[in-house]
Length: 260
Image 1: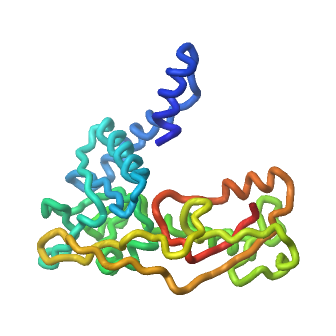
Image 2 (image 1 turned 90 degrees about the horizontal axis):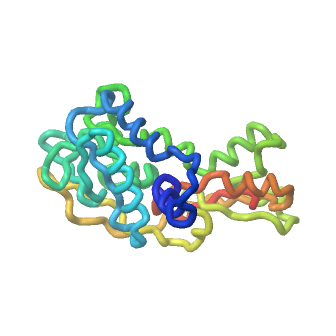
């Protein structure tokens, strides 16, 4: 959102006679137009978590919803905690008991698949095959790319590759003798290192009505700590900074590593 909209208004205020090489907003609108015929009929729901105390996820979802509206799509907003499960029809419903045909969510798949109604999510997926009842944006396979454990897997597959940084999941290994390693959460923004900071989890699912009760927060008990060297060129440090923070609140007690 910052690059697509506030940056433009900042430029108009600070440099009114200038222009910028930035068409992110227009491209988002065009992308929705191109995808419109692939979406199921009915409104596209845009969901965020009520556990987002800062409101950043809410603003991001609201902005993406606006780009969809500008593309001519019918949209609805709700929180993840308002999504319910109708046992009679075997479908997800919104706070008005309407079927959830397509939904953009700013809520980690890693949480969604382990929530109380996670099995229903997997059973009703419709992301291209056409056999499910809910099309989730983005699809479930994106969770593999948003997890920093991928860095350790890539390093194992291609050790010493010039475009990769040393990363491990099972301990410091050869980096134990150095002072330049850094532990990274598998999920979450950079700098979120406090344990047990995830917000309340998604709701239990009611029969025929939206769920109103959230399960108690819990902290994952299994951890995977990784270490890697922080020494290297400035180019390597820049690669590390760009190596994969993701949006949205997330658990922080499970960790991977990458060079800083």
